Length: 203
Image: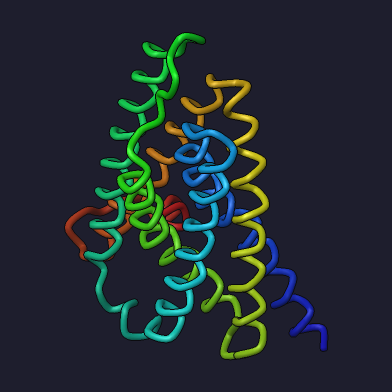
């Protein structure tokens, strides 16, 4: 009973930390849209997170063997950061009451959200599946909680970024760090790069 309670607590903490990654990037993308489209972007992000987390959970053991996935995921996140940076620059240039709309492409933004879901969901699933230690019910609970937290946090982040655009740049730095961690972690797993044992837990 104590062991199961500890596993459950561990899964909850992993979800809170890792759902924040997903929520920040969905919130950043959604913040560029009017409330109606913002809700649609967040819905796509949450739905994508659920689908990809279930897929990764089913194939988790098999996927863990492919360390290069982490590197590809990290590179994808860096590409998304650069793309979002361009969107933010455009919004600052065009921000004017005379303009009818300064929204980026909706379809392109949905693609960004789904790409980010693929990358970050993989990391989330690794954490949850690892912590569940074979308890299927705990694993399902962890994945559902993660999706709920992602949706709630993404909505809050999108609304907050609309009022305080500087926070968007802080978010970009945060996502960039996650991307670099994934790349370095993948290179260490493939034994291409060596780092101090004490730092391995961060990658």
